[in-house]
Length: 389
Image (cartoon, rainbow, N blue to C red; front, side, top):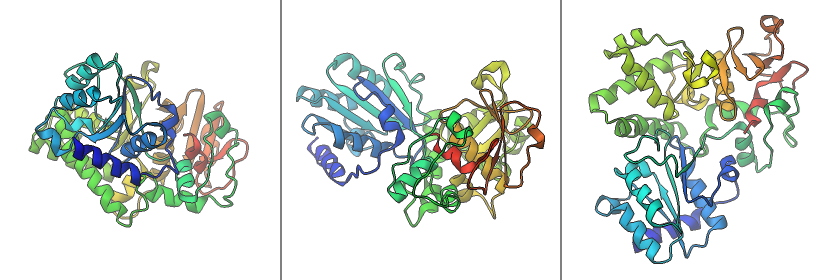
């Protein structure tokens, strides 16, 4: 236990609190059981350490990684019990999905240690409703996305730009003081700005490693897959990367993978939960999760550059970034008359020469244009939607 505490203190000393992610101020940190989930590499660990450094007393706080070799021979609950008996009040557990009986032991902590807070992180495929013990009535769950264009500008340029509501964005109210020409910065972000480790010189290699670990470890562990089945995930991702965005033919994809179409649906669910892909649904019954899948995209534009071959299709890039940035705070659906719909708004996404002809007879319809700096009336620059969170 002493070694784990020493590791924790060293991590805290190296933690920079200059830039803190958007989700931090949305989390109710004093809740007794809190889950922060998200795809690999989006910054969950840093978020925990920053909060500890800014707000917790290190004398009654500890951060541990459930994947530490210590827990191959020691129970997580026993560690928590010892910590609690010695005055511990705040227990932060990273990568809890790497520990086999995580849900059962978290439930025990909640039941037996009423004066201790437990905050844990896990892969975005972590489902607290499907563990061996249901935590849904006990834990508050938050989902951390990758960086928005706004956050990328703030961290890379040392700015304090604020987020804007959808209503303000469509009214062309987004202001970026200190930045005269946003387009070069937006293009940089599209290629390598979604993940907080964007400054690393081997960025794409690291990103491909993240994808590999997700496909080879996270999803197979969660879904109890064998090696041969897990290999099908890689094949499916290759198909998607060569075709996105596209409307899936599950039967045809199943034939290509030599699996039943129902298994293809499961694979797509896992890939979406892991943040590797995003599925655009229609408005069937008015409930997003019940809608049919109209298109499949890669999860963000950085993934397109990391695993795609040749020059990425610019139309794919534009639709992907709009979907990626807007689905965080909005219920975004496919539109039968344009590209996307959000509530009463309709959006057609294109380049600077895109016209309003396709949506001319639709109320609250907007043309979203790439390669323009400023919007006017019903035309909005694509980069502005990167300020929604």
